[in-house]
Length: 164
Length: 171
Image (tube, rainbow over all chains, first blue to last red):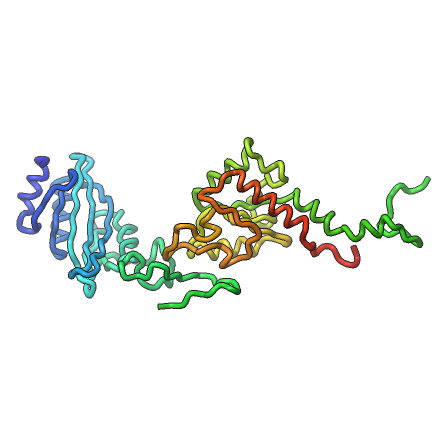
C-alpha cells in the first residue's frame, strides 16, 4: 500500500469503514453524512485535486438499494481514491460536491437523470444527456429495457409506445 | 433563314415519333434525375467513416452522380442518414427532412438507421422509418462501400422507374 494511502487511512479512521486497496485504488466506504468532510480532507490535505467521476450502482434486491461512487485523482501523487456510500431508494440524497470541484456540476446532473440520485446543494439538476419530459431513470435495474419515449409522433403503421 | 429549333408541339401534324417520345417522358426525367443526386449527409455516428470512404477516390460516388454533398437540406434531394438516431435527435432529423424540397429520397445508411441495430434501449430510435419514409435501406455495421454503391444503384433504379410529378398533361 502506498504511504499516502496509509496516512489517509489513519487520518480519516473514525469516518470511514473498512478501507481496502483494489487494483491500486484506495477504496473508502463511508456513510453519506461524512461525505463532505472526507472529500474535503482528501482535497485540502492529501492533494486529490482532480474529480474524475460520480456514478451509482443499483443493487436492486439489496437494501439500501443504491451505492454512490466517486473517483478522485491526485496529480501530485499520481494515485486514485474511490469513495462510496450506500443510500436507500426512499431517500436517495447525498451532498453535492460542487462547492469543492466545479466539474461536479455536469457529472451530478448525469448521475441524477440516470439513477435518480438527488445531490443536495446542486441547484441545476436539469437533464443533460436525456431530454425534458423523460420519465423514469433509465439506468435503474427496474427501468423496462425496451421502453421508448419518443419526442416525435411515429408514422402510420408504427405503434406509438404508450406510457408506463 | 429557317429556324433550327425543334418545336415542342409540331403544329398541324401528328408525328408518330413525337407521339412515342411523349409516352416516355417519365423515363427521360427519371434518367436525368438519377444521375444528379445531391446528398445531404446526416452523419451521427461511426458509419460516417464509411461514408467518407465511399465518397472518396477508391470507390467514388461521383460515378453515380451522387458526389457533391450539399451542406443545407434545401439544396439537396437525397437524405443519407448515416448512423444511430436517438430519440433526442429525432426532432432535428425530422426538421432537416421537412426542409428538403420535393422530389426527395431517403437512404438509411447502416444498421442503426435501418432498425436501431443492437441499440435496443431507452435512447435509440428503432429505425428511422418510424419517423420518416425511407427509400433504400443499407444494413451493415458499418456497410461495406460496395453495399452503399449497390444501395445508390437501387435508388437510381427506383428513381428511373417512378412517376415524376413534373410530368403532366401540359408537358
